[in-house]
Image 1 (cartoon, rainbow, N blue to C red):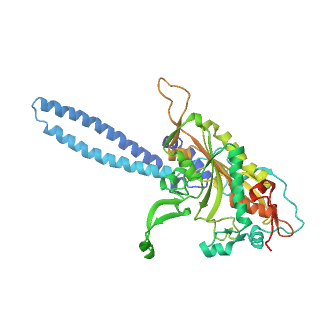
Image 2: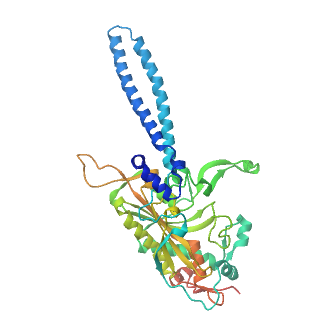
Image 3: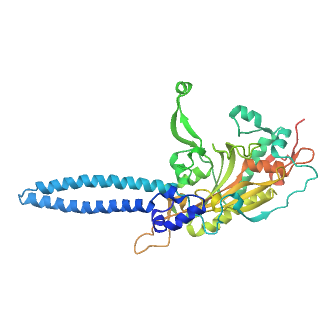
Length: 447
């Protein structure tokens, strides 16, 4: 969330940034300046009436003390109370409208973010690795997985519907191996602390990271019901949502807290399943496991001082890139344009892995700097240790939050199948994963 004072003092700049995202400032902001002015006028008027009420109260006391009739003054005091109640209701209504407007405004993108309307306007800033040359026609992962008997999409559809997957045998083990490998890399090599958070969160957590209220339709909400009610089709909403990413519970670990500056930056990593009701445009990515309702991810989250967030953003992105490099998977880093940058982000890099079976790059990680946007929504602050200022403690400031996939496990799984496939239909295991696969060096079709 943006600061009210910032929006008030930089309204034209905010409107310009909204247009750069492809948003309509009038639809999001309404008549922000008039609304803010009405709120401030109501508050100012209320303060004036309260001062007058205090004067009248003193007059009532003086009149009664001197034995004089205080009826007229008391009547004016009661009339002021009614006006104050009305002004308080008006101010509360204006406050609510302003909070709704602020909650609906996306973050302001950084100046270095390229202006554009779609992924076509994103900028490739780095390419790593050589694309493998095949002496046969490489297959997409869904054909490889089905042929090897390690990916079963038909039975997954029987269990849960479209956009779910069942991993079998060595396929399930490869998924588990990737999770362990990624967590070990990030904790042992990159200095992150591992967290295992809940997989369900409340609404306040989703508001804190920016998913609510704007993206409620993209989420799975839980319902409570006893057996009899369920049999009748009667369900009661609970305040539990399945997490769309570990970013939500991990960032909200410190919601409504003041952090010790000496602890910053805080670097956390977490494995979780992720659940998303939105699965992309209709008819897009319907084959394979590119876009699923349930998938697994290893997430990276940082809490930093504002002046260090740029450097930590670069460092976090490198930590994700090193997973791909150790696995020897070709990739590129892409700076997202304004129209493709997420709601809460000020700047985002996407890492895209090369998939030879499909002859294209696909996103495998998004690494974002949210600056103070999430911290303001979740009230995550720290007190600078610059010493006393005029005899008092330094003022609390909002931390900057960052996060990125380190990596999306299912997409890494399919990238291995497509990049390490062999002419006989088998798939070689990357050297770094062999210890996690019990020494297995390839996945072959079971006889």
